[in-house]
Length: 254
Image (cartoon, rainbow, N blue to C red):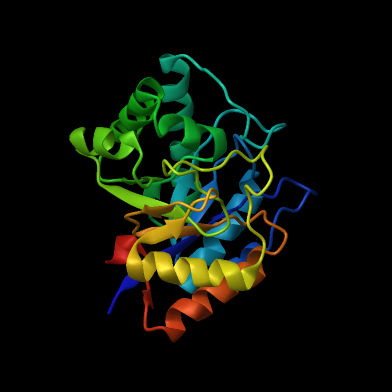
């Protein structure tokens, strides 16, 4: 029986400003990428999500990003290596503390937004994030873009890497994600998304924005929690996969 992890970015509400429906998503996904306060999230809200994840048996990881609350971590930045290593360690450490209080284990790291896309191919910033993870706990799994150079770079440094695909993002022919600034970058039709993900999980292929068929090796697929129809999309994907005999489970429980 084929299996796949279904993850989502959660804990991104900030004070009185809600972002997504974390409780609903936790009843659907198998892994939760929890914001660490730099791009989104506040301590009380993050702690609440961690406690809810524990009740539902959902694995959690540190969703680290650039120090960019205003831009939601989606603006390109060029921190020094000293800054990026320190910022990454700080964020993982913050989540580890909150997770300990919630009785949860942090088992992986998934960079967010612009940091995720930058380190996919920027070897210097990738090395900084890898170094930070190893400094905290080299057994933490790194979630990275399938097919990106960082996958081999991190593995050569001894990290376990899980390759990820995106249910609601369009791909370029080279396997990179279409920039959010371009039309068609985000896919909104739940039925189309579900069919697309079923094909990716079963056949390992996805149609790029230009119609090219590309191969992707994925062990986890992501639904962005801040997408307006995130819950509906996640439910559609979950139902389609289960109906076709695909087992949903966290890669940390494999």
